[in-house]
Length: 161
Image (cartoon, rainbow, N blue to C red; front, top):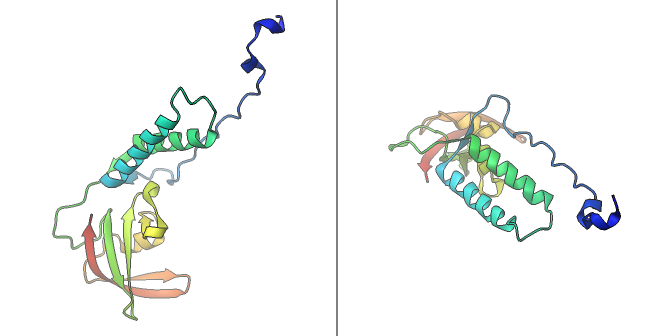
């Protein structure tokens, strides 16, 4: 075929295929999300889809990959609402305040894998600290091994947002 009858786009190299996205979850684990986390992910997805609208023709593989990850996360999500009060046991979605032996308090919010934000002390329900706290009761003491050594943490408050 003559070059005159081909589109210039046909000569452009094929974009590299998007790598398959491995789940951040271990095999068989459920993709728990808080209701607020699911809403945040949906808002982010909607915004990214607007950026990827047909009028924006430039390829953006990072954007496409993030869209795919959000779509996969939302499609497999098990949205888990907060239990009704009184909140006396640590459950998924809880914000837990703990006190160590020195009297110092720390706060952790137990969230889904895709909601994790260490700057805000939001830890995945699969993280070691969350595993130590889950199902503990208000006033109970749990042991947790930090890099600096093992500590006993007392559950002093449990709230849900």
